[in-house]
Length: 237
Image 1 (cartoon, one colour):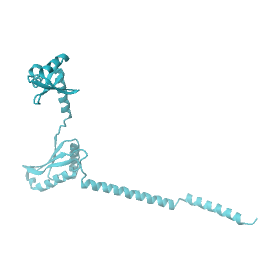
Image 2 (cartoon, rainbow, N blue to C red):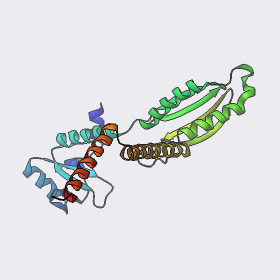
Image 3 (tube, helix red, strand yellow):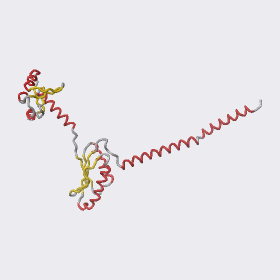
Image 4 (cartoon, helix red, strand yellow):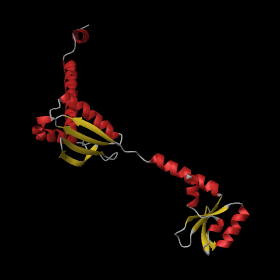
């Protein structure tokens, strides 16, 4: 049924009843009378296939119709394979989620966004916990801020019944900006590295200025030998 439907999408050969058509191929395009195009198709043992009926004149190809349908099906399959399927992943919080649970869910949300999926985070208020809705909003705003590098906010926190939702979409690769928190962490690491480097340099200077006992003994021996030679040189023969 699908093949028949596909075949009916295109007019071929004698079904094409316009006065002239534009034939396109590897060498370019040529406008010619439809009768001449049909004769050319018969000579080549192929079909005259109308691929753009709304053009003026309609655009046709000289090709085996079954081969043409196969090419169309293959092209559509390739395009479908290239399409990225975006899923919406859910992250659920309570109004008083502890830090360990928060970090665990934050890590999963980062992975979802990096994989190109959207994230719907929500705080569920059970019973009288709805009194802590401001606390839930603060939690979701913190969540959005911590994901600033990989996700962008599509919808700010909003209360729907007993749930407060936040929607995040993935940022395009290379377009993510570092959050202030990330920049502060990087600055702290760089500062720590510089401090460690300075300590190592100071330790190296101390080692040079205060050599080991072996070094002192070696220097003393050299000085004694030099003094002996100087004395022998200055004494009369």
